[in-house]
Amino acid sequence: MSRKAWIELIICVAVVALLLGSMASAEELQTVRLSEVVRSVFYAPQYVALAKGFFEEQGLQIDLSTAWGADKGAAALISGSVDVGFFGPEAAIYIYQQGAVDHIVGFAQLTERDGSFFLTRDPEENFEWDNVRGKTIVGARIGGVPQMALEWVLKQKGIRPFEDVEIMTSLAFEAAVGAFEAGLGDYIAQFEPALSEIEARGTGKIVASIGAEAGPITYTVYHARKSMLEKNPDLFIRFTKAIHQGQLWVFSHSPEEVAQVISPFFPLIDHEILVRSMNHYQSINAWPPTPVISETSFMHLQEVMMEAGELHSVVPFEALMDNSIAGQVMETK
Image 1: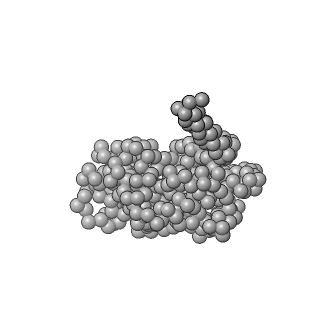
Image 2: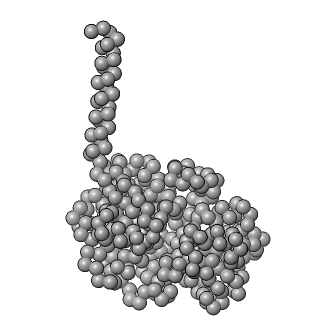
Image 3: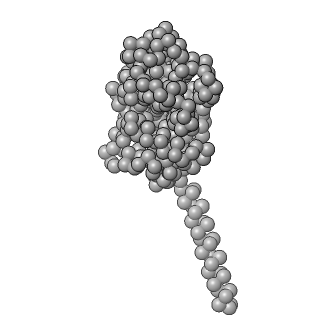
């Protein structure tokens, strides 16, 4: 065999070995079907964990889907079509109170503040909360935590929702910003990056953070069916380790760096707007540096729900939140 033929053979063997090795590595990864409630920049630590390969380091491959609603995400989890459901624990509370046998349990927290900011239409306004009296706020869906948190903040400021101020709650989440920009309302409570985009166009000004005003609250949590959590704790420990790595990375990096990493998940958002959004969320401590779920914050969530008339009896923390997984992760970090 000629020297050229030998070289070509060696190259072919190397390529085949590389491909087989890649296939073997992929086969060794355990797939976790993860359903996120919505695709949102608010969940930056999760996207950092995905982009940085933190799940692969734990032997996991994430099959990510977007439910577009906590009710849909919870339904997918209960049905067994996903392994992990990422949504607000209010959905778990409602399901538990309906008497579900294999109810869903939260095992790791990603956000601990409401993600809404408050924007005025008048960029020159010297804002005080009393300014909203007699005005109209574009709010969110009745029964959802963003709306309940807004009502909580207004009441803390001595303002009676729907009496001292009109709140529009009939708009779909995705239609609210467009309706506001078309002239509806004097103020709007909404998640980033929508309000930074309005501000950048000079047609409004962010004047407050609902999350900062409402205080720490168990807001968005990773859930699993109780039976699966008990049957396969190792999988959820590895999953939570990856999430914790994402939390720590975001905690120790600048808004610019975080925006750069998560940008592939948000190709339609301008980079400067993404940076501004990351800065806003970091400034209110939206993301805790640990996945451990706070009992105090969980009880505060229920306090907000009860004040809004959406909950009539408190659910014990240990009935729906399980810190055993996150606790082990923190012990072995």
